Length: 304
Image (cartoon, rainbow, N blue to C red; front, side, top):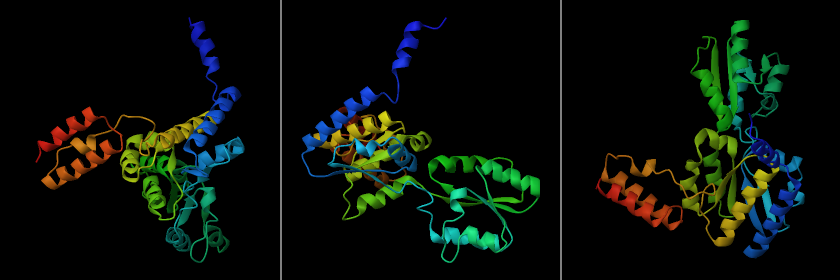
């Protein structure tokens, strides 16, 4: 029989609790005031975060001195012209192109897939890579799936590629990886971005540990969050707390760190020295404790 206490407590765990949201907004205001600067700028790197922020009107309740700006999180926006050109060329060559609807009108150097379709090319809108495979099986046509998106869609494309697909099916990949996009923003001399809000669903695929070296290298907080209003407000508060405390390089709001890349056996002393340098950076960034630092340092020294 279900525990009535658990059921009652579960009812309180609402992700859209107005009272909790107001408390978090007040917390944001206090943290911005504590930072004490005219502008604090955070960038999210996911179109779903932007959708949630707009849908729930979160910018209207954020402190005026806090800017949460949209980063390179839309796969359509970061698809290169040559990638579209390749898809257009294949379509005009008689291949049947299957792709997501938002890719059809993305312009290439001279035309889009929609333009190619107007010239007689066959372009099909699908909702998944699996649907593109079905199209190839049912028609017998040579189908090319023009794949786009970040980590969350890349993994579904990879699953299809590893499955039993017909010989008349192929993939033209325009998938992107979000860390390099963050690197570009962080390295811009004129960047105002002080921290990043990372996508929870992408981190489910990659693990949040891949942000640790980035945070240490750039001294920028990275917090992974979901897409409910309270997720975003809480993550923003975690970022501001780190900024207020001067801890500019904690990833995901956690002190735990994946040291696989630091303790794996290397083939040369140069590799060990490189990992020793990275370990030192993590300690200086307060991402690991002194005890963890000494333990991993001793393990790496054994290889020298």
